[in-house]
Image 1 (spheres, rainbow, N blue to C red):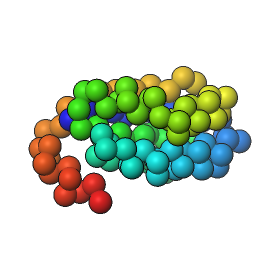
Image 2: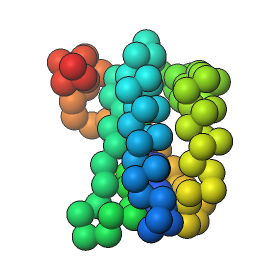
Image 3: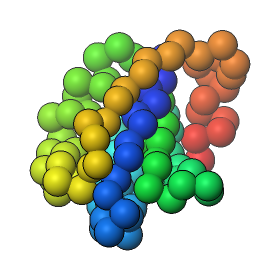
Image 4: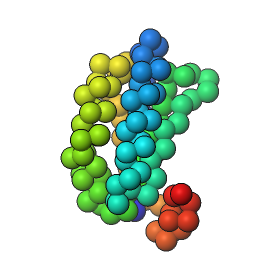
Amino acid sequence: MVIVHVHVHVKPDQIDAFRAASLENARNSVQEPGVARFDVIQQQEDPTRFVLVEVYRTADDPAKHKETAHYKTWRDTVAEMMAEPRQGVKYTNAFPDEQGWDSIAS
């Protein structure tokens, strides 16, 4: 499993547009066989801050995700909405184990 937290800071006037584009990307991303989860979360205290929580089944799946049409559309759509470059941090799961993600993915 590869878990990626993508930290995004968007411009205040772009919150709704970024959220809409990201939700569309997430809805499509969870249809990919290599994606166990794809969450979009928004900070309560500062709604310009989002985290995308991406859980991939193998080390190859993040690259496969970046080749999809929906990812490329999202990337190009949100590029000018960001107040600063997005930051991705990779993690390895401790719990649940690989089989456990299937029970929470739906």
